[in-house]
Image (cartoon, rainbow, N blue to C red; front, side, top):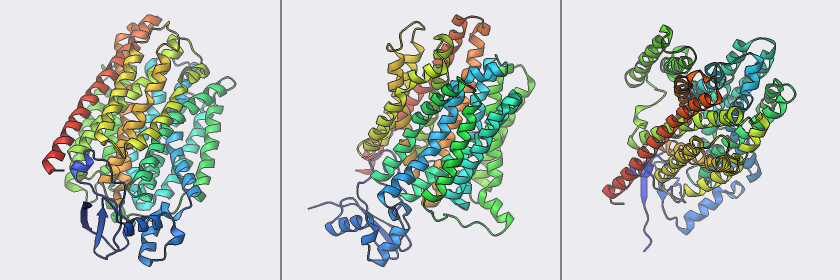
Length: 559
């Protein structure tokens, strides 16, 4: 006799199934392959093994033109992606993935021609050079949470398009800074990061709100994650090409591409219903957006990050560095107080942070902090120590794009087979392996010795950890909180990169003996890389604890 598993949850008629999974499901059991929706006005039923009639309903959901049942039509219309043709769905996912693609392209283009830009502005201090990268990552990470809430209130599509337009304007200004000085360029890079901070959470929220849990959603998130390494390689390659002529064209052409994407988004992305109706009064809107929590949270992240990155430039003996660090901690405490005690609609609901979600967030922070150091110092090693040009180094790194694409497809399949806990563990092991390879690469070794292996291995850490964490959080919250879930993951990813660069820069500056020779410069790079090894090793330890806990939870629940 076929065994079924059912759960009944109060839902309005025609509502989309959007699971709030129990802890043991969050801990890592694969998502069910089939889900059916009961159109009773009071309950929604999920069936692990569908009957023949239920399978017919699922077939109808995949072809909206064959739906005759009014209740089923209402359900289909509440799932935006199911109202689109297969070709339109491909375009929709592709445009959304361009948010991640362009965000990483903007990072890659600056890293690739970092020394070209530094030579133009006569910047030789490694700490100042790192700001050209860290300043961008800082704003990408700090404004994401507030951007996600704004998407929940004002609409994901509207914010997604606005983010690309903002991104385009400040990319143009970054290019025009060639006629000014380095201050304007760094200022433009910092404000440029606000663009992807708006696009990323709302792009992920569009996917989360458009697809119910299942294989399509897994693959969509996996494609989103795969766009990161590909975008980085494309951005750095074109930066290297334009640097052969005039480096500002890197940013001018980028601005043109961003503007075109914004226009295309108007026609390609379906209209996703707003999850929250905007308040009618200004006071109500402030409460709804949790501006008090948003401003204190952003201030805390900016001050704390600024202290660590600027310390690598001027040293910790400067009084304002310590003041910024203390104020950052104080604002962080105030932020958590507001979220727990004051906010009626907190940006980060504490109820979401069960033990499993906390484990995942910690693992992602360690893994992507390691990746930030690896990415920056891999480029520095190949350009400064091995003497490669930006275009040559981009060619050396290009296997990342191919390996990343394979990793994304493999991860999308594995998410339906393995526990997310195991996927996270594999990802952290890859981060650790890739960083060790970089730290042990001799300066005079040929490319095919270790650098090629490095470029093939590292993308698997990125493309396994990101979709696994995103899917766990997306399925852990309701449909109205998809913006928050996407924002939280992106905040952790990008803030970890920026903060880890600050840590790495501080270590580099203290062990490179002034960087007066290649040997001393390499010693500074190695110091930062050893920090990355420690971060990924600690993340691997946490992920193994996560695996053990998931098995214990399953055994205790009798499943």
